[in-house]
Image (cartoon, rainbow, N blue to C red; front, top):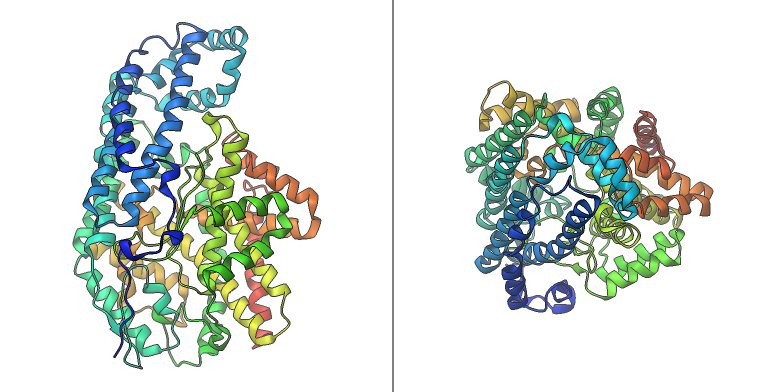
Length: 599
């Protein structure tokens, strides 16, 4: 009997890890910056009472804010990436704690700024722009602050809310440490006697196996162990929504959903209309489930059968080097300048590639693009991991281009547009792969993967969004988010979304307990809307060529220079209309048609 082992962090080759020295040469250099930043709360506090005094004083505040943005990006980024590399390393968890405390201290010191900016009369502010043209750089920032006038409190109240920031992060922090560092799963054995380590990172790859007994064992082992901690995890979610209720109530919002979306200028109607559109297209999801059941040749389709490819024989190992080359080929349609940035990321260690003990699960792009983005992967040398590489580098180059083309104060973009570039890369990769083969088996395998993208991004993320909405309603109605209540609601939604041909195994009722995004404040719906926008953009790029590419790059370079609906219109997509979602779901139906014809 053999066993596949996950390496310790110290055993991972350096070229497969990200180069954090681009942020700080050493831990000692980071600690020196930590000492320097301790002086900044006082520098910020010294500006209290001055922002409405003159154009020069207001400009000085924003310049200091820009300086801090630059310094904090590297400072927090180093601590966060170091901590995520090995969540069991207490030294780096301490650095992360120091970084968080620094952010809270600076936020608390600057709590006076928003009320003071709100108090500047419109005529006075207009005169400031005339007196100091350099302030025009911050017009968008000032607008975003002042548009929320009815939700801004007094300076003393704002300072109190800012000071509570560290406490508000507790549910996410505790839940993350439990899932990533403390929660361990027994190994599982396949039909050949090979023992496989079971982790958050290996769960889905193991569920992709063609060994049904292994899949069932993985599913049951994972959720049985997760169930032992369900009350603790439910408690973290209960307090997550309590803190959301506290801040929403303090700022006079009608709901936690409204409070969360207002920060990014996304209408609440977009959230509800997504759920409505998906409900109206459940027939396509049910067709997908029925097709999966038929092609797998099973009497019963279980939740542990959701990830295994329908055309298993077409699966092949794809090394990280092969994945990089294929991604470059697929994205050539975006131009040589885009490919040059991709190569820079590949060659200069922007990416932390493989899983190691204690490494945070999943994948992400840091969003911090100074000096460049950092991408975390848990690469598995398969098709799905190649798509993840394309996805995360889409995020990375969106951030990179926005940073290069926008002033510091508006280089960041809001969550609503964040998933568009990443998903557009995935769709272009899929179209590229399909264009290279007429082989029915290979096409069926790829279309299955594309269908899984739709299922996982539009339907599944909308199910998550609906579950999160239900949690918000329960909490706002005075109910506690107990494990039993959450399991019952999640099981009900799982049955609704997967339909009559799926056996909704009891274990799936616990899936909510492994989803970190439920701590991200109504984040997940934007995967579905972003996917829908990306389908429209990718179709336009492939149909129109250079004009569409130029518009798309303009969008990628726009940062937060406008509200998200306006930004997407630059790329030719109107997300205030239901059309992009409906068209994406229409494409899902067409892919099912082709799959049925092929098989």
